[in-house]
Amino acid sequence: MAGKKMSLFQEMKKTFMLHAIAAHFSNGLIPVAILYLLLTLPGGDPYFEHTVEHLIIISLLAIPVSFVSGLYEWKTKYNAAKGPVFIKKIRLSIVLFVLAALTVFIRLSMPDVMYQQGMMHWLYIVMLFAMLPIVTLLGHYGGKLTAAARQAAGRRK
Image (cartoon, rainbow, N blue to C red):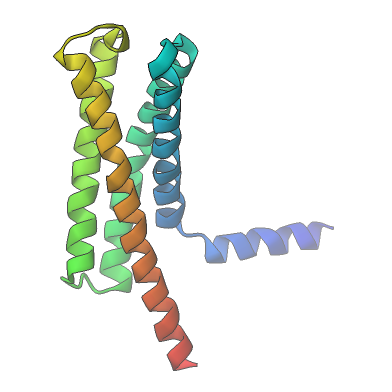
């Protein structure tokens, strides 16, 4: 039994990909935050709204891990190639981080922002929704890179 556990641990260690884990983390939490935002809007349920806050804060913490690990993979796996996909992913990641940081700042500095009717209320909602296409594009471009890498690996065999 101990040998199987050690083998599983060694397999996990050998195949561990920090960037993929961190990227999927924030790319999964942001759509869920939008879902909870949509559940908040009709009735203003504070529990749903607090869930949005928590998911966005966690995403904000995961984005730099994803960004730095992505830069590391870009440099080590792709020799820092200046291809358009890489440049798009870098720019989109920066925009995502800025949007998430501003959204968290607004929410933490104005805890009742969802219950106001001013410009900050709508700015907060728009910025939350703006993150959705960004994570979608980041996932799309990441998928293109991994598909191309799999095809290249298949041709080498």
